[in-house]
Each structure stands twice: as C-alpha cells, then as structure tokens.
Image 1 (tube, rainbow, N blue to C red):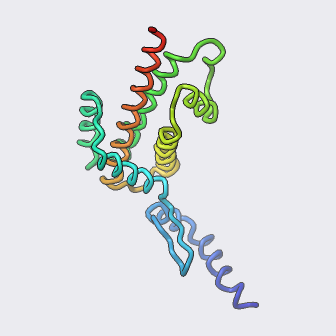
Image 2: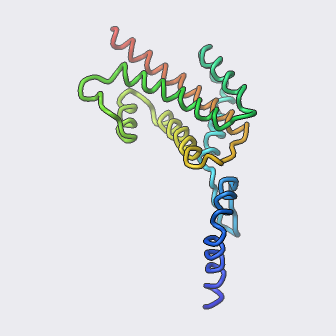
Image 3: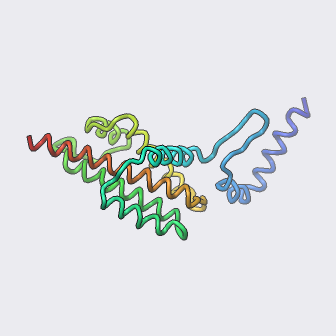
Length: 184
C-alpha cells in the first residue's frame, strides 16, 4: 500500500515545490502521455489547424478585402504570432458586432452573454458548423489571453488567420442574406 501512495505523493510534492518552474514549462507542453493515458493541452489549437487544412483543401474563396487583410496579418506572423491571433479575432468580432447591430432591435438590443450570443447567432441562421468554428476561435484566443507566455507557432497562427477569414466571409454572407430579406 505504501508503494502505491509513494509515487503520486512524490509527484504532488514536487509540483508544489516547483510550481513556478512548472508554470513556465506547462504552456509549452502540447501532449503528455504515460502508458495508455494521453492528455492534449492544446486541443483547441489542434482543432483550428485541422479545420484550416480542410478549408485550404476545399479551396474556399474569400472576398478581395478579406484576402488583403489575411495577407496583412500573415506578414506579421514571423515576429508576433500572438498579436496576429488577437487581430484576426478582432476582425471576426467586428463582423459579428456589425451583424448584431444591423439585425437586433428593441429588447433584443441588450448586452449579450456568451450563451445569449450563441442563441442570437442561431436565430440569425448560423449553422452548427459555423457556431463550432466560432467557438474554436474563441477558445484559442481565451487560451492565449490566460497565458500570454504561450508559444504559438507560425503555422498555428496562420491556420487561425485562415479560419477567422473564412468565418468572417460566411458571416458576411449571412448579413447580405438578412439585408436582402429586409429589402424584399
């Protein structure tokens, strides 16, 4: 029985004693595997990279102004990938705010909590896939906001930008459809 408790106790004491060092190292670890147990620390970023690869494979086109914005952001990746993540998120957030501003009226125009925003997007015609992509984008940005020391690779930042511009393009399509419906 003592041997069964010894190694977890040793690990726990080590973590407590070395917590500052662990805090420095932990953000850099992407996966931890011991025998049959594997923990992925950067699952959110992995999902973004996978989705961006799908988008690239499909060859989706984005409007010229978004293409220029994507290119502008990609030019900054080599020296500040975290800043690029924030800028790409701001691009998406700006489009969502414009859509909310143009479509919400009366009592619906109130501060939106995260859950409320998801419901509003659903009412505006956002499909499940788009909702999930927005959630992935938000998760990665939240991860970076919580830990500014987190090292993002250029490939990861590039994938994030690509997913954001694709999402913005689709938000604009929804906004244009809503505008056509209100004009009719």
